[in-house]
Amino acid sequence: MLGDERFDRPQDFDLGVYWVFYLDDFQARCYIGTATVRLSPRGRRRLLGNVALAVVRAFGSTATAGGDDGRVEAVIPVEGTEHACCELLRLGGMPRWLHGPNSPRSWPPPQRYSPEPTRTRA
Image (tube, rainbow, N blue to C red):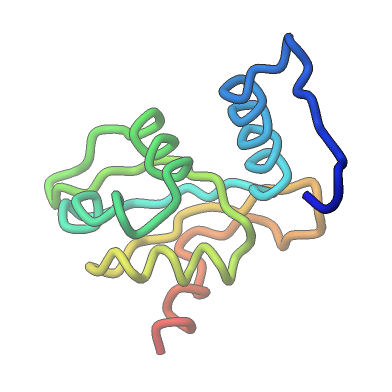
């Protein structure tokens, strides 16, 4: 603060409540679509610390039992195709991009096993 200006916090202001609201609002504006992905056991172990906590939580709450190869399918929020590909490739084990992103914006229609991660990896 400069000079003699003084700021008094309103009595009913709750920083914890404000911060939770702010983060929820930020995530609502940040994630503009969803993608259905299938991750290997290695990819699931690497989720925490490599992608945003909102993605980890969404994966955990939407995960379905995997097949014989141990992979698990889930729906995650995405900021966009390019950003999602970069985040998922950090998980190793070549994640499979099954559908998405689904967004009210002008995304191409969902494709099964979209080539984006393969192009990005190359």
